[in-house]
Amino acid sequence: MGTPQEVVFRVGRNRSREGRWTEAPWAAAAGVLPAAAALVSRMRAIDLAYHVRAGELTLRSGDVVRTDPFTFTVGGEPWLNQQWGAQVMFASAHRAWGWNAVALTYASAIGAGFSFLYRSCRWAGSDPRTAAILTVLGFVVGASSLGARPQALAVPLFTATWLLLARRDRWTWLVPVLAVVWANVHGSFVLAPVLAAFALADDLLVRRPAGRGAGVFVATIVATFLTPFGPSVWSYALDVATDDTIRRTVVEWQPPSPLSGAGALFWLSGVGVAALALSRRSAVRAIDVVRLLLFFVLGAAALRSTVWWGLAAPPILAAWLAAPKPSAAGPSADGGSASADPRRVRALTAAACVLVLIAAFLVRSGTDPETGAPRRLGADAPEVLVDATRRAVPAGSRLLVFQPFASWFEYSLPDDPVMVDSRIELFPDEVWRDYDTAIVAGDRWRDVVEGWRVTAIVLPPRAVLADELRDDPEWRPVTDAAAGSVFARR
Image (cartoon, rainbow, N blue to C red; front, top):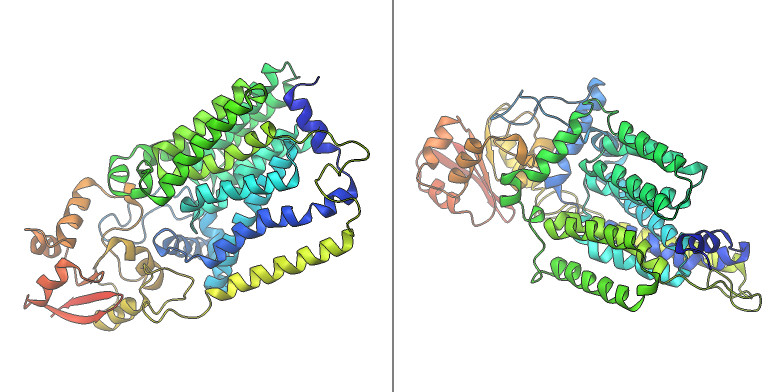
C-alpha cells in the first residue's frame, strides 16, 4: 500500500476528461461563491482608499512612494511602503473604471484564491463535492479577514503556492516567481518560505528525492528580497506583527474572541478539525499536525490571521477524506455520473456563474445617499464630509480627521494633510496620545489642536468632541450630517 502522498498523486492525476466536465458545478461553486460574496460586501475605505491614492502617485511618478505624502505629523518621513505592488494594481483598476474595477479586481483575487484551494483539495484526493464543501468552509472561517485590501491579493498567491508545492513537478519552480510578487504585495509573504520548508520536510520524511524541494526553498527565500526595499521588508513584517500600538488598538490584530461571530467560527473549526483527526487518525501524518498547529496558532494570535488557517486546513483535511480509487463499473473519480452530457453541464454551469456574478455586482451599484460615495464602499468613505471640508477651508489646511475616515480623505482630498491614518506603525506614541486626547475631547484637546495648527475637524456621528466644538466660539459648524460632522476655525 502506498504512502498518503502517493495516494494524492494517483488520485490527482487519474481523472477522465468526462469526469472533469461533470465536476464543473462543484469547481464553479468553490470559486464563484466567494467571488460573489466579495462583490456583495461593502469595501472598507480605511484599508483601501489610501492604497489607491498611493498607487496613483506611483503611476504618475514612475517611482515607488518612499516617504509619507499624507499627514502633517510625519509628512516627508521615510515610509517602508512594502505593499506598493498592491497599490499599483488597485490604482490601475481604478483608472480603468473607478471603484467598480477595484471591486472586480478584489473579487477576482478572492475567486481565484479559492479556486486554487479547491484544486489543492482535489489534488489531495477528495471527491469534487467534498473538495467544494471544504473550500467553502475555509472561506466562511476566514471571511472576516478577507476585506478589500492588499491581503486579499495575497490569497491566490498562498493557495497557488500550496498547489504548486503539492504537485511536485516542473511547475513547482513557479513558487519563487510567486514569492517575488507576494513580497511586493503584502507582508504575509513570509509564509511563502514557510510553505516551501514544509514541502521540503515532507520530501525528507517520506524519503523522496529532495533536490527540487531544497532548490525551491532556497530560491523562494532569495525571491523575497527582490523588492525596492530589499531584505528590509522582513523587518517591516516583523515590526508590524509585534507593534504594541497595533495589537492594543486594532481589533483584528487581537486574538479572536469565542464570543464573537468570527471568533466562534474559528474556534469551532479547530474543534472540528481535531475531531476529524481523531476519527481518521490512521490517515494523519506528523507533518499534518505540525502544519495545522502552526496555522491555528497564527489564527489564535490575531483575528486577521484566521484567513491563513482557513486556507491551510482544507487541503490537509481533503487528504484525510481522500476518495477511494474508483472501479471500472463505479462512478468516475470526479464524483460525476458517466451518463451526464458534458456540454450541457458545462453550459448550465457557465450560465449560472455569469448570472450569480452579475447579480452580485449589481447589488452594490449606485451612490450611497448617506455618505455620498459609491455604495460599494462602507460608512468610512464619507464623501459628503469631504465636500463640506473642501468648501469650508482652503487647500493645504491641516485636518484632524477621525482615523477610520482618514484614508478616504487622503484619497478624495489629497491636498489637505491629516493627522493620523491607517498606517498605525508609522506614527510615534506621542502623536497617538495627542490624537486620542483630542478626538475624545480630553482635558488637553484645545492644546493639541492649537499645537498642531489644525484648521478643520472631521468627526463621526455622536462624537463627544462635536458637543465641545459647538460651544466653542473659535469653531464654527460646517455640516452635521448622518455621516458625521465638520467644524472649521472661525
